[in-house]
Length: 282
Image (tube, rainbow, N blue to C red; front, side, top):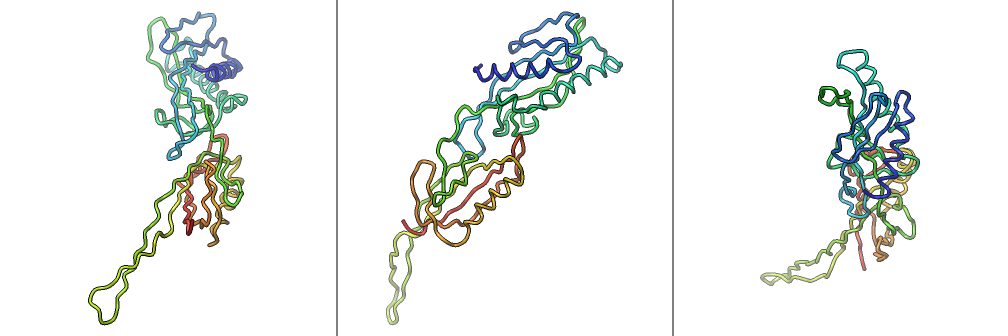
């Protein structure tokens, strides 16, 4: 459990305490059985689970820390009764309260989708929640309606970014540049009156560079503008690509911009992409 995790749990507790009808919120250790006095019902028990380290698919830079948790809303209620309906409505209100401030007052941030719990929504959100479920009834214990959730923070982000002729178009998200091997060019030349031919070594040809990353913007419109700015470089001219590690690759022609799937939406819009360059000469 990190200090950032504790801050997130505190923010979650504050959001749950503000829900009308909730009398108490208890923080439990993983697997701990919590006894809530009847006088403190309805109550919410918040239980942290293990954290999940993540990076964006295909972009192994930056480190995202996704804290999983469970919230159980407790009250005296029997299924198929009016009291049970009120308990379900209270659990829905608790989930809505958590989702209403996904950034948790700046403590959480959007990030890669979870591999452990892909059903949580929004998949790349700063705060994600799941469906309501009813725990198995236990004699002499209050009924529990629970929902799972997760909140993420970036524990390490990318310090440097790629640029094209000094234009910093890629700084909104993590990205990597991979440099391919140049193609070796050989041309077969035939001569009149001679059997066979001659292979002429033309040396190394162009090489392919691929940049894979994620672009982020506050709105779909801003994301479209950012993509259009990158596509404007697909004009047949050559540019100097500066990789995140500071290495320059001159004489690069932007060959293609690929969108790797649809945009993903959390508190912002995120577009996985790949840019292909051809370095014509070094």
